[in-house]
Image (cartoon, rainbow, N blue to C red; front, top):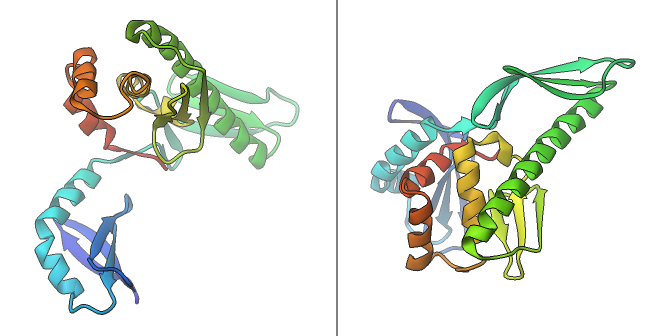
Length: 224
């Protein structure tokens, strides 16, 4: 079925409908303001009825997405919470690599493919360096130790395993420093409390008094 346009909270959304062998209807809004509606095949549930029932929820989600900040936006990228202009330079005989220059990230290489790789490698290295430093600072405070830290392509900002292995999204350095610290501490704390129990949340609040505000702020950044 072709996409249909819908206006909610002054914002235009497109929505598409698909039918599956499920019991309940599901709605999901993507960061680019596209609403996906999944309906049961053999029940009398219509898209119009779902949109009416979930209108307030949709308004709330649209408002949240209106505040979203993309990590990469056209010719700019976030670096520690600030947008920097990314300049790609093709130069066979000149410096090959990445430089931070005030409000710019200058990427020099001998091909478009190489410059793309150089930028990814730079962001990954910056994330790894910062996370390693913070983990070494936080671990003694928590009275824990960890086996290793990796940065890689994952859908979340970070996760850990029970045996002390930590993994973080390679784009983490794009976030404001306060949020990076929040995520690193969060994953390390799981090595003491492998859950989101009251004890875990109390420990987070003790370290970050603005715990709820940081959680809300984190939702405004899209992993893209």
